[in-house]
Amino acid sequence: MHLAPILAVHHRILHGPENRFWDLVSDAMGKEWRQTQSTALGLDDESFDETCQAALGLYGLAANEVKNLFDGRQERVVRHARGLAQS
Image (cartoon, rainbow, N blue to C red; front, side, top):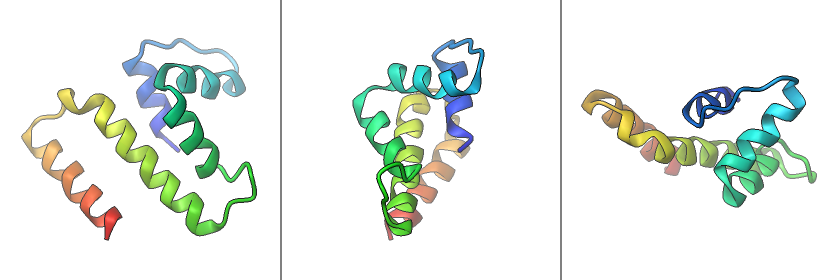
């Protein structure tokens, strides 16, 4: 789950304790991120498959958030990874 630190930098979130860090990133990213993160972390007894799909969903949400920072090569890598995740 290395996406949150990247998004924290993107949103200029300075954080203290790690437990508050996740909340700050969730607040910045919104409801869809918060719900998907909860599923990815398995907070409500989700199956392994559900947590994996949610983790891939977080990747997509993070990529959408920072896509204007990608160069052409990075954009192709992200597009390829997202295609693999959907198959």
